[in-house]
Length: 114
Picture 1 (tube, helix red, strand yellow):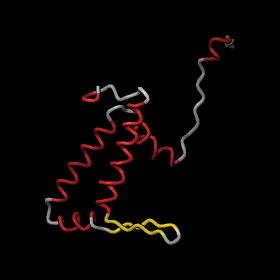
Picture 2 (spheres, one colour; picture 1 turned 90 degrees about the horizontal axis):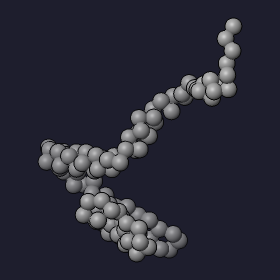
Picture 3 (tube, helix red, strand yellow; picture 1 turned 60 degrees about the vertical axis):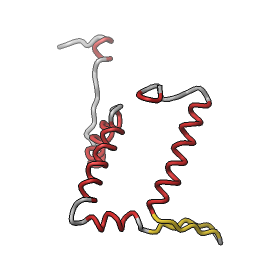
């Protein structure tokens, strides 16, 4: 009979089988942990957009950006094309976050922001 010491017990790793959703999400979670994941995703989206816009389905690409998106509360309603929501809204949020980070002394110390 084998006697297990305290040191041997601490090395025992108990694993459980993954649920189906965990099996699906695991590769995405591992990708998100990579530092380069944002750059890879941006590059991939750029290539897909260029191919789509210059394909026979380019009119669908253009009409996607002209799709009206409405946000409203009570009597206040704001309707703009998706292109303007991205250009004006998300860019403003990005720059507010970036300038706020710079103002508090933080900052992204990589690439051209260093």
